Length: 302
Image 1 (spheres, rainbow, N blue to C red):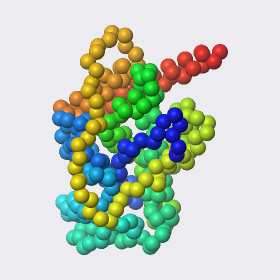
Image 2: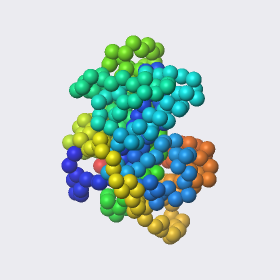
Image 3: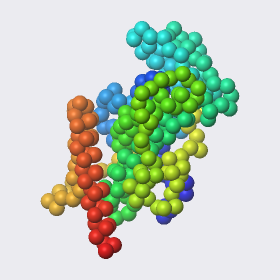
């Protein structure tokens, strides 16, 4: 997807998802470029609701995947469960023998047909992730002079919060229906996921030239794995800039949302149990800001 008025960002994350035919979702594994980004200062990574790892190219490697499988097996052993894990033939997907996890590979070149994650699960997650990201940008646009300045304020920690929310909001019905499309015998009484991508794009006031496919899948061609071990695993992150200490009494939606963002970050460090409540309040502020923005647009066109 080409960038208009700028260049495509080099910032990226790789995410590993795993879910069951009944809708159970495991904690995502997220790979970034730095082991300790500046926005993680004071944050206990064990409280992030994702498993965070890093390497220079932000790729899934066979070593990372092997460690993930070992941990999955330990988790199943603690729960006294035995599972059958289906995987595609990605280069980093190694095969081994485990006590509580049996691995079965899909036939070559059948991922788009037999992999449930490709039948709507990842698409639904991406739609929600983009929604949270765009709401974040739109409701803070008044505090920046240029779009680049606004984008630079997004941190890895922001992205992780959106990942956690989007995965949590991915419905059980989306997962079970995706397994059904691949031929798995799964029954469900829940309704299909009602997230409309067309309405989502329209609600974000995006260019009429932006299609649903472009909006959701513009990053599909970015490499996410390799079959060789990566060197120089950890690098220094320049993710965050120094905070502006200027205080103003003229509050706007953008400034209030900025304060809520700081409070959420503080809660992530001091008391992770507060994050969800603060996130809910931030959502309400964003919805109010969007309504206010649309009202102003209507008035300006009269």
